[in-house]
Each structure stands twice: as C-alpha cells, then as structure tokens.
Length: 393
Image (cartoon, rainbow, N blue to C red; front, side, top):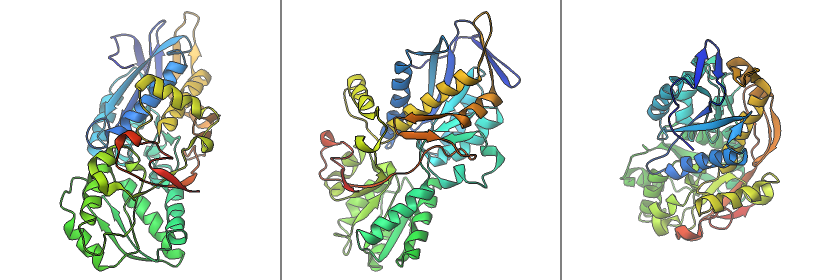
C-alpha cells in the first residue's frame, strides 16, 4: 500500500489541496524502518495499512495511497523524511513518527507547509506541552505523554521494587532525556535518591566505563528507557560488571520488541519494561479483532506495542477528512489544510487503543501504566503480556 503518486493526480493551491475525480487521497508517514529499532516503526506502518484495509482502501470514494518514509529514529532522519514529504503537493496529512527526536525535527517542517502530523509513538512531553512553540501547532498525537509515564514508573520502582537509590541512563534524545528527568523528579519527591543521571550514545558499544561508575554508586535499580542496540550492550555487559549482576534494570517502550531478545540474548531474562498496558483487556473493545487481523495479514503477532495507536491515527484522519473535505459535483475533493487541522483536533471516538479526544495542545490519549518482565530470550515466544510478562497491575 505504497507507491509514487502519478503526476497531476492532486494539485496544491495555496492552503488547499484539490483531489481530482478518481485520483487518490495521498497520506504520508514516517517511522524508523531500518536498523536495530525497525520493528518499532514497521509495526506502526502495518497498523496504518490494516486501518486502510478496513476502510476498503478508500475515503470519500477516493482510493488511499500511503507513502512511508524511513526516518531512522533520529533528528537527521526526521528532517530528511519531513522535507521529502512536505515537497509532495498531493499529501493531505502525515502519520508518525516512532521517536520523539524524529518528531522534534520534522513537525515544524511539515507544519510550515501546512501539513498536520499525527504522532503514533513519539511521547516526549514537550511535543504537546502547554508552552510548546507555534511551530508545533500542527502536531497532535494518539499516544500518551511521558509526563505521565515518568511519574508512574518512579512510583512502581519506589513502591514495588522497594528501590531507594537509583541511577538513570538516557541517550541524548528528547524522548529519553525528558522521560528520565520526569522519572527522577518524581522518584526524589517520593523520598528516593538518584545517585546519578548517566548518558550514552545510541551507537555506543563499550559500556564498561559507565557501568563501572554505576556499580560504584551501589544502586538498587537502574532506569534505562533507551533503544534496542545500546540497551542490549548494557544488559550483556552489566552481567559481567561486579556489583551489577543482580541489580534490576528497567527499560521503556523502545525495547518492547522481539529485537531486544535477539540483541541481548540470555541477558534479557529478568529485564523489566515500563510501558502502557496494551493487553487486550486494557485496550479498546475491538482490539482483539485487530490482533487477529494482524496475525492473518502478516503471519505473526505485533512486533511492538503501538500498532493500535497507528491504527487510531489513520482512523482519526479518515474521520477528520470526512468532516473537513468539500466534495464538488464532479467528484473532486477540496481539502483546506487549516480546516483539516481543526477537524482533527475536534475528532472524538473509541479507538483500538481506547478513547481518543484531543486537548488544545494536541494530546489525544491517556496513559495506562503497566510493568512487564522478560521471561526468556526465545524470539518466537514474544507476546506483550506473556513474554514479556505483565507483572503490574
């Protein structure tokens, strides 16, 4: 469900997009689709594809053409993808991305061209904060904010793990820096101590120096909500670092994928993941149907935890287009970009991930906390809820 738009199918006229009779409505997307975190982005692309299939492949009588760019979970990748998408005059809106670093760079580029972007797993608090810059007025998201996840994680670590002295690790990205900051702030407020807040690069391989420093601080737990490649190195080398062999490590949403099992091997056993509750009983009423459709279409279970959010993002766009687009007598559609943005912010529905309703800053979904633990390193056993096993609530 992707491809190149035929020349002349749709024409941008100032702040409007005209979709000629029979021409496709073109929807853009950008996620991490290659490298060590590809399972995260490919899962969301599949969520959009499943929604399009459920729509019969069309909106308002026009076929849907879906163009997905690889933004590599980096600011540079987000900038490149957004520049390419913004240059296509036929695109009506953009879905994604996977990572907050991508969104931070891309959302202003897209909005400058009048394109609204619907975040599907970028959770950095600043993206929908009350004081966000006007450059982000065209960004909204159908996923939670880490302003809620950080405090929830801190409470579990303090109360359930009984940890009183912790270390956090970020990788310099907006997502990990803001999430560890929110967690640390709440943890100290509960009476705990944050011995240090360390940083690694996503491409670091030798983690021994930072792990040796962490071991000297004798933490009760290490909070490390970063992505697969660096996390795998940390987990493997922590098992070989005196003083850290039995210290619990807690990751975030970036490691809720079977790729961490491959990358970390047996070192993943016992690793915790702090993530929203995405078990069927905590999701929307139709979520079990989505899981079955995913299995039927792709021959496997979802490879990450955001497929429902991506499906909801595409559903939100469909509902907004049906409200904002004006249909002309000859079958053409005229889509005012500002009207589409307003319609998106006004849409309310019960989605696959739960209720969707936006506040004035584009936050359209709530956080439902949960904690998971990897029980074994067999990729074939990956299923969020069983392995990693949900242990809270």
